[in-house]
Image 1 (cartoon, rainbow, N blue to C red):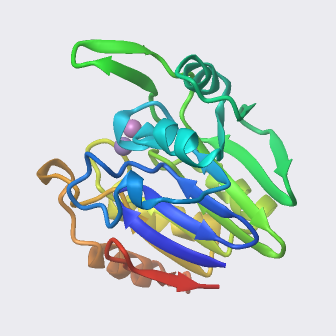
Image 2 (cartoon, rainbow, N blue to C red):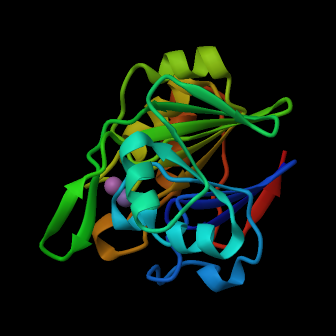
Length: 231
Ligand code: NI
Ligand code: MN
């Protein structure tokens, strides 16, 4: 399985299928790809309605025929906007798409779909995703604060890799994310959702420092947009 960071909270996961998570690309100054660069995709996972996560997912689904997977309310929005291939779910549920198991887990965050600068409407709850492809499991936390049920997520799903926000202001910062790493017991954590704008400026090496202090043995892998690793 190849895990490629596209910038902000966007990842491309290539295993038996091509999966994109939160593809916010065209309006993201730090993105390593633009939506038109994506010629094929099978599954798009969207954690919540904020523009920096919903991003270009609808256009990419239209361009590639990929399945749009998210919480029920966001599916309705995607369908209203012309996406025909969707799978709706909700917190605690698991679906299987061609052998890949996708579980929606809670995230402590809001989820407004901003259709204009002045507002929008509710996107339901914000979620995170567990993706299991064969014996490889990863966790994308979405936007979230720290919550102690991450320990249960670690125990139940045993994610080998966890993708955790560290930007603070809207999500956990590095200190909170180090506690998340301790709860999850993943082999690898990858920081995300930082340095896209000055409002979420962070030094990702802080996460490394805090994780080392806790001594939980997790490797912190810092990726620049466009960088990837394989598990
Ligand atoms: Ni958000
Ligand atoms: Mn966000």
